[in-house]
Image (cartoon, rainbow, N blue to C red; front, side, top):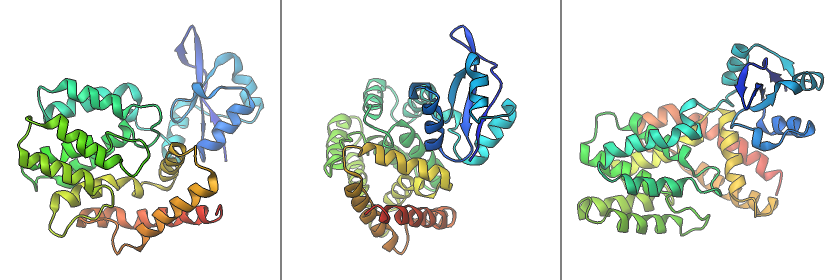
Length: 296
């Protein structure tokens, strides 16, 4: 593992700051920063901001000096970089712009949903997940579905984790919320389909021939196929949502979910998703399962 730091060139709060990263593990980055007394509030999703007066101290402690451009290249290559569009300050504008295309003139409803997706107890089921699902639908849908079907899919995505309390009733409560919120805004038939799609995300087993169900299921499971380091970040975020559960109990429960997924003939329903995501997703699930079984 290497901890890297770039020169203090980034102005804020009357001083200059360096960026501190790891090329291997966010956990080890946290540990390094903690040893030097940097609070986690200085962590900005994939790096720490270090004030210039402490630069030499961090170098003496083992941080390797690199240029700003080299630091970015290493971070991208490591798979730990958070894309700019997923930064907190950019999420709401991007999501509101998408919502206006999906259901014009209903900004108040979108803002209510974004408040739900921004709740502090969410570590994975948050606005980044919502945007990721919507972007995955962009790729999966292409031009193969009609505009009304696309609206149904996107509304289902917006509502599918709108209620997230970490219980088995979350999807049902989310479907109920959609029924209340969308009543009169779309047809009864479309609303029924939105609810069905939300409930489908409980098990991700769409009926044969249910194209919309297949598309939403695949988009929701895109995260399983991310590069190994990004997948590890996802797994850590899921664990953080259940930090009230003892480690061994969580490991048993999570292992059971992964084993059930791996027993499926196919994780993904659509051919493009199978070709692009299936192999990497299985490798990620197997690697996480191996680590979990060591904890049981």
